Image 1 (cartoon, one colour):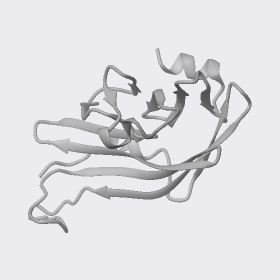
Image 2 (cartoon, rainbow, N blue to C red):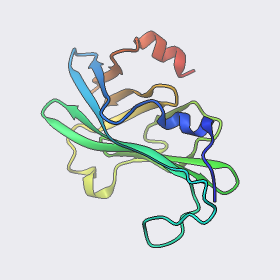
Image 3 (spheres, helix red, strand yellow):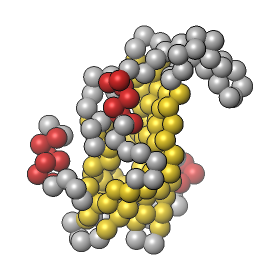
Image 4 (cartoon, rainbow, N blue to C red):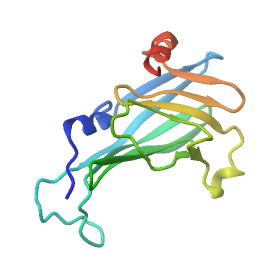
Length: 168
């Protein structure tokens, strides 16, 4: 069985259940992210069994959230999973732009774009204004996203200058 370290858990210690985070756009629009679920499966019991179909030896944690944009809302998530060999993998879904499962051990920031993420085939043609890029910070959570129409959203409590310095 793997174990998430305190350092690993920093990826999901940013928000708590029920938290709201506000994002302001370059056009003056306001989006809201609300955390709807937070979970940590990090049992110390060496004979731990998951609630699923069989033994689960991989510690995992994450958030589910709702992101409200204009008249639409979307359910998204971040999931981390600790594999044997100390590899920490993550997948994130913001407005159906899903990152590939990537190793985030020793990283502080994940930048999702067309190089490392994609839209599921089911949603690829149904979404009119796709997210081109987003930035997820270990310290702050979701801090930035940009739609293909060029509108960019920044966390309201972080200035764009501080975001730029964070993503070096």
